[in-house]
Every structure is written in C-alpha cells, then in structure tokens.
Figure 1 (tube, rainbow, N blue to C red):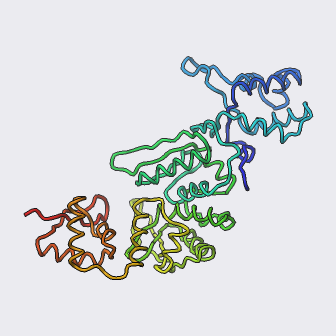
Figure 2 (figure 1 turned 60 degrees about the horizontal axis):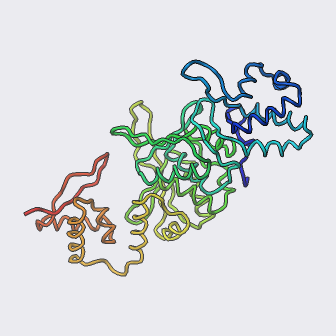
Figure 3 (figure 1 turned 90 degrees about the vertical axis):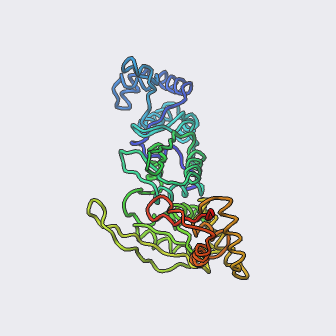
Length: 392
C-alpha cells in the first residue's frame, strides 16, 4: 500500500472535524439539492437534532462547553459522500478526495486529536520505526491511551518527530514521574489506524507481524532499528537483543539473515524470576555475531546515541591493529576521569578501544597503585561500578 487514505481508517472508531467553511458549503449544497436537513437525516438514519449539530459543527451542552466542536463519525461521513455522489451524479471517489482535502482534525471517540493531518498518509520507513518502537517499549489496548516508555531523551524526540512527520500535528505529551521512566502519550486514533491497516498489536506475545516480510529492505531496517534501539545491548564483542516474545525474535533472526546476511546466535533465555503477582518472567535473547557487526552498522544501526557510540567502538576495535600498552591505557584513564569525573569500565573502554573485561584488570592495578579509587555504583538495578581519580 503506497498511501493510506482517510477512507482506509476504521470507520466506527475514527471521528473527524471538517474545516468550517468547507463543512458549511458542502452540507448546504447537499441539503439544498435533496430538500432540507430532515431529508438528509432520514437518508442517513439519524435523529434530526443530531443532524443539525453535525451540519452546524457545534453543540450546546452547558455553559462550560458551549460551541464545542462536533466530530463526525467516519462511517456517517462515508454515507454522506455516497448520497452527495448520487444526487449530483459525481464519481464517489472524487467526492471522497474533495472531503479528504478538507479535514481539520481526526481522533478516536474520546481521545486527543491529530490536527492539520497529513492525508493521505504516505507509507514510509518512519511508519515501521513507529510500529517497532511500540512493539518494543510501547503499550496500548482498546479504550486506553497509547504510551511509549523509554528513558533515552533522544529516542523519545525521534519518536515524536516521526509521529508528526507521518501523521501531522498530533497532540503529544511527554510525562515525567519522579522515580519512573518518562512516557510519551499520543492520540489513540493513530494506533487504530496502524492496527486496521497493518494488523499490528501492541500488547502481549504477538510474534513478528506478517507484513514485515513484505516490506522493502529500508522499511525492514527501520523496523528492526527501533527494536534494537529499545531492547538492544552492546556487549564486549557483539550486539544482543532481548524480548519476552520468543516468536518475534525467531522472525527477526530469519529476516536479518535472509535480507541483510546478518548472522546471529541461537535463542537463549535469562534465568527465570517470579514477578510480584506470582507469574514467571522468561526473557529470551540472541546475539549478532561479531563477524556481522559491520553489516549491522551498514544496514540497521542505532538512533540511541549511547548505543550508536558503542557500535562505533565495536567497529573501531575490530579494525584496531594492536592492543594499547599499559602506559597508554593509564594516560587515557587519567585524562578521561579528569575531564568527566566518575566513569564506569564500559564508558572508559569505549575511549580506549578495548573490552571492559580487559580494562578492569588495569583498573585494579591502578587502584592498587593509588591512582584511582571506587566511587560507588550507577543508579538503578545492576548499576555499573564507577571509578574516580584518587585525591592525595
């Protein structure tokens, strides 16, 4: 599908507001032709009072909600287009194109809106990056607002930018709770559209969506990039991605090999643990082999700034001619700790281009020599040990 038109949206779940001038002109033309608003109400099986509100684009509920804009259910608007086509003897597709160009906003029944929407929506790699993020770190069930939950501010900015460039001026909020991961909220209508067009689900174990295999290489790359950005990890010699959804990982492995010739390990799982509610968590993962790191960088890559830096480090280490001497390692460690304050072994390893495992041997020697000392651990579960220069 090259484009997603308004008429491809789920007609019972989406409500639209027409541009004011167009709405008045369009309904006046139609009601004048067929003999009044009551006749249009009869043809659309609608109560006349409700029809009046829709034609005039407002309703009077109470003193706080006077002149509240009335949104038209998409199924009703389709009926009106069909009637307009019939009475004016105009091709229905042409009528629908005219209406689509004059949409002011759309939303779900009680959700936030997409203003000045981009219609038709052009299928692009960004759509599949959005879907990938929602499958990895997103959540949505019908009747609740969709959320994208991620601690990296750069990824949240990229996600918001993709939403606006694909769909239009959507009402989007970043929500910050003390002690919790930041959340991006956005209109439910967007998820309804993605669900209808691509059959996507954003909760539970769903496997790899069927449509992914039919995408172009660039579209697949953006989909995979989003999942690696959210659920990926840069190790000392490879890249790992994990998920509760084993079928999703199996599908990813197959397409990474088929389309990008990226070789990966078999799927393993971490030690199971019991959640607070008593259920068992089993997290699966696979690794991208070191010999495929260059291909991964070329075709997939990261938007996550720290993971992108880690990927650059992996590539640099593969191209490194020799391991730095102990003297050079000490010089770099001192310079980096002076410049940045306390740092972990993985952070320092990126600057020196050696593995964190090998660097830790040197750090212990520097500690014994009185050059550096431990500075506690990073915040969060399993935070890395930090080092700082020893003040004499």
